[in-house]
Image (cartoon, rainbow, N blue to C red; front, top):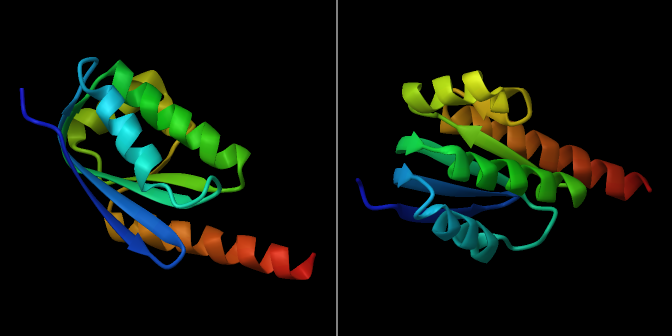
Length: 127
């Protein structure tokens, strides 16, 4: 099993969390804690970069789905970027990709998150 590591980059309007390793039952809680500690506010727009995550099990998927639900409840979004082909297949089989915003690249996910961020800002200034 590969060790699970994280790197967080805070950009204006979006946070990008890069995950490397394997996310399974034994360490999904570490991912959840890292996401919570990296969050600047509840309604933040976030990108989870899975390009270096070679495995995401059901516990890891649950963390992503719960993070998505929390962000959505608070006016934010979660975008999943560049999942490894095996991870993308698992998302397809479980239909998690019908709930999560999944993008082929980190760049595409960041652009989508920033577009949502700008739309949110415009809505708030019009109110």
